[in-house]
Structures are given as structure tokens and as C-alpha cells.
Image (cartoon, rainbow, N blue to C red):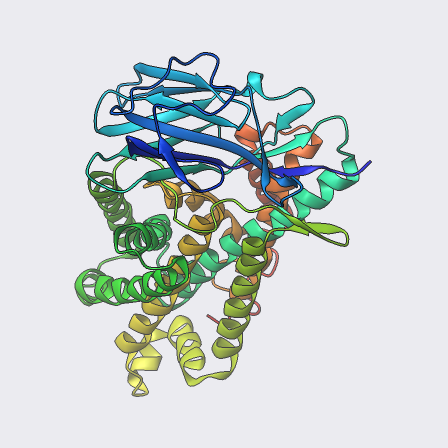
Length: 448
């Protein structure tokens, strides 16, 4: 039996008086569609309302439009978690739910009300946060929901999907692990603020995309460049003075922990605690490519990651910068005595490592959503990837990242609960280190 993968996006529009009909024409928000929401009273045309539409983009009608998903209950709560409204999607998959005032609201989907024979997959989100603004254009949030018909999904199909997701996730982890490995190779520092550099890439992408109206592609490019600039400033203003004062590695690791806390608190204060979506590529239906199914954005994420990793590895092996980084890593004092500008080499490692990590945050944001803790949640997996492959070697970081990504995504197929699926990767880490303490590749091929 074939896996039926349904990309079921929930597009939520927050508007004042006007909403968009499935065909794209505006209609008064107080005028429910035919077959109106059975649990909702008609909404006052002048009231501020959250207009939510559920459509199945993998099941198109005769005109090529996504089919609606009716009968699904949606609840809206405010920032204090107090319920402010509820609605049920009608025959057109629409629910119009009034909210009391301008503010931030959370829309929650009641999974038990999905149509018979349909269930959410393990990574699906059941809630989305929407900022309602009275004086702005319609604001929307997207539920990146994937659903499957539980009685038609074979183990082989689910395994293929999980392996594909594992490769994609592993490549994102690999970019961040590569950045961490480059910085460690040049400085010997295990940077515990590295996760916040992932978050920086995601937040900058959101700011340039949703805040300034740039496309996600241009926003991602700018975010990656600015992440590299941040790495340059970070080294010049923080790490270089500490090195010149003779600060030990342990003390610098403690500084990195404090710096990470500072960055994370800054993100929370400026960006907020809500989870937000980019304006493009949030939810896409997967297409069949033989044994695997991939959406267009997943193909782009995998392709970009592979190209960037390949170019970086070749540059580290053949360029003068790569040779200089290896020399500084092996013996900084000897490198300095031979006339090499050690500080410049280390600064270049910070710029390149931070840019790669920022790119990982950009791709992670495109793949999912943006949150001030998105990088912090990946930090342990990044360290696990570098440790598993062998600290100080970029090849080890790549191998370790792919192992971690595959184990995390495939684990739930073999009984690992989705809420703790990262545990499987850490168990693999422990088992391999018991056999080979230096990691899979150790330090034999250290080139960064």
C-alpha cells in the first residue's frame, strides 16, 4: 500500500472586517461561507477576526484547487492562555473566529476532530501563534501540518520518508557542526553559544523577509552574510582580547556559556517568545521521485547544503587559508614564529564558521518556523555530531551529523517516542565512544 502524504496547511488570516474567499476575492468577515461554522455565531462585519482556512493541497479538485477540510475544531487563546473563541471549519474549510482586540493569539487545532482515517504525522504542529494588527494588512500564520491516511501507510513508505527527512535534517546539522569544528580547530574553544548563531540566521531571515518585505531567498543571503560579520565582530571584541590576556580554555568556555545566555535573552526580548513563519515556502506538497517524495523547498535545502559543504571542504583542503588554519590548529606558537598572522587566521575561522552556522539557521527556518530557542534546541545535537565524528575534523563533523540526523528521524519508526526522539542519537553517541573514544574519524584527517 502506498503512503498518502497530504500537505495540509492551515492559513490563518487576521483581519479587520475583510477576509479572503477560497477563490481569492474579498468578502466581509462577518458573512460566513455556505455551510458556515456550526459552532460559531456569525461574526460582526466590523469585528476583528481570525480567518482560518484548512485545505488539502495534495488533493486537487477539477479546477486544480486544493480541497477544503471541513469539520475541524479550532480554538483561539490569548497570551495568558485564556480562551477567547472557537470555531469549526465549514464546507469550504473556513472558520471565522472573532478576537477581542489587537494582540498576539494562539490558534490550536483539535486533532481528534480531523476526518476519519486521517491522522497527523509525528512532526506536525497543532498550534500556531498569530499577531493581530488592526492598522496593518492581513497577517497570516501557517500550520506546517502533514497528515497521512493511517490505514494505507506501509512501513517501507514511512521508512523512505523518514530517511529523506533524516538526510535533510542531518545536512542542516552538518552545516552548524562544520562551523563549530572550524572554530574549535583554529582556537581549541568549545563554543557553547554556538546554538545562538543558528538562531541568529533564522531571526535575521524573518526580519528581512517579514519586516522589510524581501523575498526569503534574498533575506537568507543577507542573513548569512550578516552572520559572518557578527562572527568577525565577536572575535575582535570578545575572544581576541581574552586570548591576548592568556585566558585559559576552560575560562573561555564558561564565558561562551554566559554569552549564549545573553544572546538568547536578547532574542527573547526583541523577537518575542512566539513561533513565527516566513512569508514563503512554509508548506508545500511533496512530489514523488521514484522511491522518495520531496517538496521543492526540501530539494532546495538539500542541494544548497551539499554544495556549500562541498565547496567549504575543498577550500579547506586546497586553499592557503585551509593550510594556515591547520598550521595554527597544530601549533599556534610555531605558526606565529614563522611569520604567520595567527589572529587573522583565527578571525577568518570565526567568520567562516559563523556564516556556515547562520546558513544552517536560514535553512532550518525555511524548513519549519522561527523561534528564539530554535538554535539552543539543536546545540546538543550539533555537539553530539562533532563529538561522534571526532573533534577537530570537518570530515568527522559531517559523518557524525548524518548519523545523528538519520537516527533522530528514523527512531520513531522503531518505537522511540517522538517527544524524546533525540535520545536515540545520544545513545548511539555513547555506544560508539565506548568503542572508539576519539570518535569515528578521530583526529587523523583533521583539516580545519
